[in-house]
Amino acid sequence: MIEFKGVTKSYGRRAVLAGLDAEVPAGKITALVGPNGSGKTTMIKLLLGLARADGGSIVVDGQRIDGSPEYRRAIGWMPQIASFPGNQSGRQVLASLSRLRGNDAEPDLSLADEFGLGDNLDRPLGVLSGGTRQKVNAVIAMAFRPRLLVLDEPTAGLDPLAARVLKDRLARERSAGLTVLITSHVLPELEELADHVLFLSDGRAAWQGDTISLKRRTGAATLERAVAQLLAGPLALEAA
Amino acid sequence: MNAIRAIWARLQAPSLLRGPLLLAISVAATGDILLRLSGDTSTAVASILDVVLVVTPLVGLVLGTSRLHHSRDVITLMLAQPVSRRRVFVDLWWRGALPLAAALAIGVLAPFAWQRQLVNTGVTLVLSMAIAAAVLAVLSQTLAMIIALRFDDRVRALSVSLATWLVAAVLWDGIVMVVALLMADRPIELPVMLMLAANPVDLVRVMMLLGSDAAAMLGYTGAMVSRTLGTLTGRAVLGGILVVWLALPMWWAARSFERKDF
Image (cartoon, rainbow over all chains, first blue to last red; front, side, top):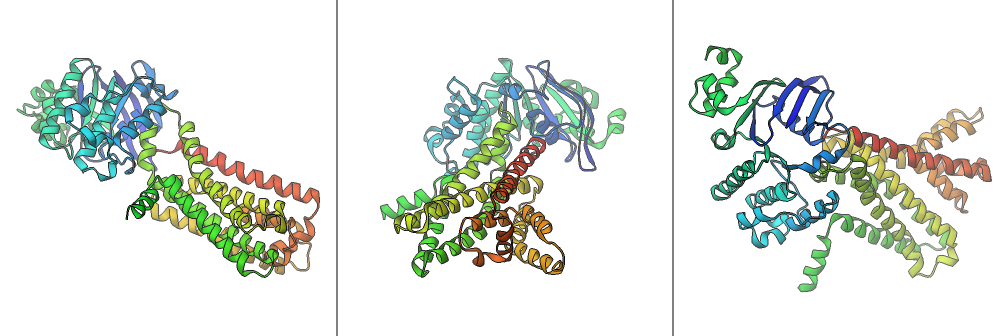
């Protein structure tokens, strides 16, 4: 379980998170949605320790994250665009990360097998296509058996078959207890995966709850329409 | 064809090795030419030292700034792992500073070694020059990190790096000369010392100057200060200031990295 309690963050004079109170429940797939500039990326950066909150607290599995970096051992991260060194292979990047993390265990490459990456894992990333690099990106995110997975537009650039493989894997991992926080602009895809929705607006959680409740609350048949109502503003939600 | 491919593959090796390797070869080739063309070794030493004092900060600042910007995604990936920022910073710093310092030191030493001019020129002098190049390389790498961390925009960061180099390595001696001329009727030791302390390139230049006979060839600041700082105390003070110049930017860079939002 991840909790954001009154988290504030500003860049210069621009307040991006204005007292964010939000929860990402354990063992579920949470869709992080909201308009551009609502604070989604900042929320992820704070969770990963890439940026520091100005105020409030973030708690992961009962521990505040502003101390030791050790909590990140449980996190796998798949950035939207992974610019790994082009002269290194996916296997070399994994080996470097493994050394950095001090992991004794071999990285889990089962997702690479499911993607059918084969020799591509040993070829320099610079010569791979964007889609194949994205597959490697997903393999790296899952390689260290995370308990929490943070995915930023995970299927961007993947072919339909690879996207299917990834979604099936996420569904299986969820059943095994993995917590997933996912952002995507492809809402039908999120609907397929997400149990829980966290909608950010102006740096606050304007809605959080399970997907079914959101659809019932808005009277919308699909997540896409429900989110469109949220985007129209709280009044639209009240009127629904 | 295979040989060309092999060389190209080598040049495409990690930039960690490629840039410094080319730099070492370039500096060594320049030193070799200067040694061959100069009539005597002291003239050659002065010319090589001038090259080191101008080229090292330029290469360190520009390479360091662009390297950090280029590595931003990798840094982000590393920071998302269960490692402290301090560890990532130290790793990033030495991977930049050490190869560059080694390349410059080797580039300075090599032509003296293969032309068998080490003893003739003075081993201490040549070693001092190599160390000076390494110190400037380390310092300019650290300053480059501060600049790259401060300016997210790559063009702006490179512009600031170039401006820093221009002031420190090219304009400073002229500024000191103008100040000295303006204060011709007053004691100028203290102002000159302060201006010297404010610029590590000048500091290294003067320290090198004090260990050689090339005073007249190394600029106005050097010629003037050699008269007043030639004592053991003077050298110790200069050394102390240089240590501060190495430690303070390092602390600042580490602090900037610790607080940076990536």
